[in-house]
Length: 434
Ligand code: UD1
Image (tube, rainbow, N blue to C red):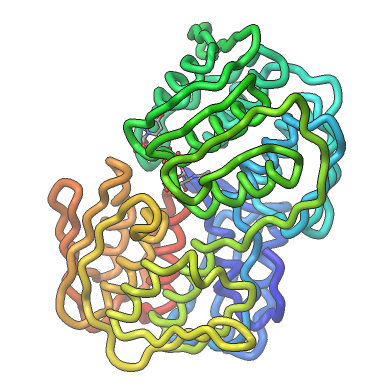
């Protein structure tokens, strides 16, 4: 990510730790870590060639300064895939420079949408489309499945590698497929690939069993070019879904109700280009708020999506943090010793599962105890054993973690699993002794 002022290595650190399966990240992000100013040297990153695969954190220093929140990864991914729907070039700004985003550019290129990315801006020029999203790319990024809806809408054909399980659970795509079937698509599984075909997608009345974020996004894109009206009930209300809808509307789509659980889409015959700014990343912002709290520092976040962080901010305030919007940005610090709270992850506007690991780190160093219930993913507690290795007191019982605050955490070698788990370990490392 780009640092507004390189005084805050935490930002780069958290984003750089997007290391599913411990894999490597781009060194551009590490530069902010290697050259922090204004604070003690908190980090050193070991870099091999272009990539970083290890972070060494010297904890115990309060983080202070101003951080610009970068563009949202989870909004950018579907919006970039949305390029496939267009018959004119499109320019995106505020695009974060992350591995998944680079993978998306490769995928778009293979599908017939050449692109040029520089300084957070990219122009994608949809050309002659090809229907195949190969396993080599899909296996590194599950969100590749979001090309399914756009390819079916444009080509009537899609061949997308079946995304496998991932670090945080099985994550099937059955809801995407059954909803697209209602619109007239037919699917077969062949050699590990989902083969989708349709003559033309037709508007349909779809009720999701669960407000799936990716499923809602895939269907929004498919329905934008379908014949007639599509109604999505029990749709996801996440801000990233709203950002996708806004982008599609800017390209000429007719969508109403985004941000509520019933979205209505009137299909249009074509979509044109536009220039679109990706929304700021609410999870990155929330992670930074946690960094201010866990290090007893003071951070001012610029371009912080304050309203989209309601549930997170409410819990952090309950824990004893002061988080206030000011004319210059959102100011975060702690007003007293932190207290444990109970958290249950929920679809938006509830507490986001993508902030579960980070708030757990904060609770590890709070007074009293708290309970975290994970209701979205079945296997999202992989950070727990690593936090315990640093001295945390956490007991797991099924989908629930009971956290008793301890006086201090101690530095230890820990293993990063998924992106948010990695962020939680960085947070713990920042506050740990050694
Ligand atoms: C998106 C986010 C991810 C976030 C999640 C929930 C992106 C790229 N990723 O993931 O960071 O944690 O939303 O806020 O935006 N499910 C099914 N069948 C389906 C679809 C989903 O059973 O067809 C289940 C999943 O296995 C999971 C739950 O529903 O347990 C949530 O999935 P979903 O809301 O679709 O999340 P993603 O779009 O994968």
